[in-house]
Every structure is written in structure tokens, then in C-alpha cells.
Amino acid sequence: MILSAQHEQFPLARPFTISRGTRTHQDVVTVAIEHNDQSATAECTPYPRYGESVESVIKQIDSLNHQLPEIQLTRANLPQYLPAGAARNAVDCALWRLEYQAAFPLQVFAIKPEIVTAMTVSLDTPQAMAKQAMELCELGTKLVKIKLNHELIIERVKAVRKSAPDVDIILDANEAWGELDLDKLFKQLTQFNIRMIEQPVPKGMDNKLLGINHPIALCADESCHTSNDLDNLIGCYEVINIKLDKTGGLTEALALETKARALGFKIMVGCMVGSSLAMEAVLPVATHAEIVDLDGPVLLKQDRANGLLYKAGMIHLPL
Image (cartoon, rainbow, N blue to C red; front, side, top):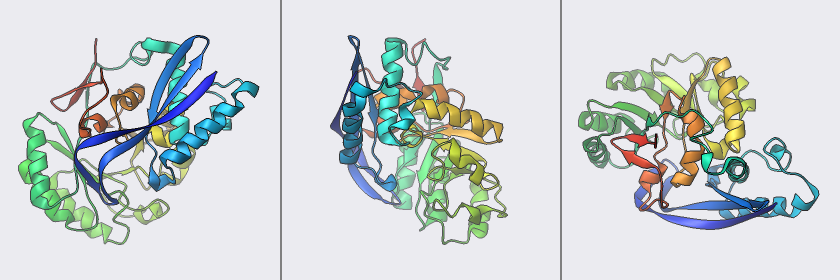
């Protein structure tokens, strides 16, 4: 078995801004695996928030490749060699594809042919965000995700809701509301018929949410990577966001989904910005999720060839 990794860069369709900054392109790492005359590829997105870079992820994969002559690598024992994160995600998904080839994932799992996905409104002025939302609605979007920081929250949400009166809306604070009066803010937001708020406080400050009345469901993103995180989130959140680049691949994502539902959490499936190669791998979880946010390829100027079909706010899969 041979592993290799390479850096790829995708220009974005437009600058993408969240509470941590703005970027104009997306860096990903593509992993190729060869074994017994078969090959497979997978993609991950290193995330600086989690201490990752293109260089660190490639170094992890190269290190694992050097160990392959002495070990028999499988999805089951992969966590012994790589921690949860982007590098393990790419290797895990490549192993899935190596085993099932073209049958993965659509012929291995029962996946719905159409999946509603959120489309993202990037952080900007209230007027610019309203325009983004209107453009998305004109394309048939059914679920809008609004990126926010700690400023002009009500003004931005109000502007988007006015321009998109008939769609579901979710908010993503990206940990930016830790110093705000959350009780007051949550009450103010109820007037806009918001479906969910994602990660309002920084990871490690989740207990601030205990006891705060929040008519809008709260979702843990940065605070939930693997099934080991769930016990500490009970009572703080109602939803958890599963991303393969956090879990370390589909194998752990399926385990996280099972444990989360047993504990009473609802499921959101999200993504880092990336191509359809990355989105396809998480469809087995997305097909059961209450909320799906897999619009990464839509944010790119150009997706990979033969990518997923996005139309009218939905992912359309072949029957």
C-alpha cells in the first residue's frame, strides 16, 4: 500500500468572510492510495483554527506512508496512527473508496436522491448580505446560512430576513458571541424565525449556555469533533455539527452520529470549503441529518470535473 498527498488550490467565486477573516481561495490536500492494482483518492481541508496547515497535513500523511511496510492499515486501526482531523479524514475516505471503488457511497449506503443544503451568506454589511440572500433565493435556495461576528447582529439578520422572507435561516457565529449578553440576544433573534444558531460561544466556554433560555436551537460545531466530546455538551446544545475534517473521516462520523442520536441530539452535517470530492464522502450521514450545509463546491469558482449537481438549493444525485 502506498499513500501520497498533494496540495491543491481552488479560487473562490467571490471573497468569503466569516468572523475570523476573509479569503479568496481555498487550499485543500488530496490523498491518493494505491494497493493491489487499485487506487482511490480523497480530499481534506486543513483548518488553521484547529492548528492545521497544508504542510502539517502532508507531513502527517507522509509519515504514515513511511510506516506502511510494517503495518496493515485499515479503517479500524487508522486512529492508532493519525489523530482526528483533516489528515485522517482524507486517508479514511480514501480507504472507503479503495474498498468499494465506484460503488462508494451511493451504492454502499441508502442515500436520498435529493438533499436540501444550506447556501451561505458571507459576512458583510447588512445591505450586501441582504443582496447575497436575495440572489440565492432567486436561484431557488430553501435554507440560508448567515455568517456573523459580534457586531451588527440584529441589523444583519433583519436585512437578510427582509430580503429572504420565505426561506429557513440558520445563523453561524463561529464562536464570536462569548462576551455578549446572550439571554438578551437570543430573545431579540426570535422575531426573525431563525431555525438554529451555530456555535455562539468559543469552545471551552460552552457552560455559559447552561440555564440560558433559548427558544432557538443551538448547535455545537467547534466544540464537537468526535464522539468523545458529546458528554460535555449535554444541556448546552440541542444539535451537533458533524464534519469529516473534524471527526477524521466517515468511519468516526458514523459512530458520532449513532452516539449523538442516542443522547438526544439532532444532527447537522457541515463542511469546510472544498470540492465535490469532499462533499460526496459525507453523504451517508447527510441523508439522515435534520440540517445539511454542504455548499462548499458552490463557493468555488470551479468545482472538480463530474462534481455533484447543485440546483435550486439542493444536491441532486443520480438514481
